[in-house]
Amino acid sequence: MQPDSHTTQVSPFLDRPGLDPTPDPGPALHLLAGVWTASCPVCGYQLATARSQERCERRAARRTCPVCHEVP
Ligand SMILES: [Zn+2]
Image (cartoon, rainbow, N blue to C red; front, side):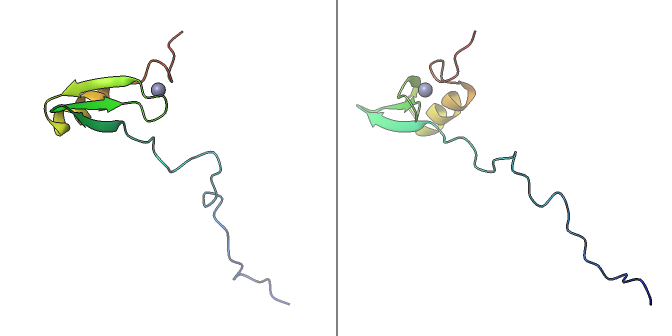
């Protein structure tokens, strides 16, 4: 009897329940009276305002919602 050397090994890294692949939802952008407003998608807190959508997105990306991420 020969030992079976063709057993397939299942990688232990295939299933990682601790990691969530979905990133945080970006800020919600609204155009109000010519001014772009980025607000928290969860609570609606105003994160940033800018004249252009790109700038507004960039500003909001650097900020974290103080309501949802309360600093102790
Ligand atoms: Zn929030």
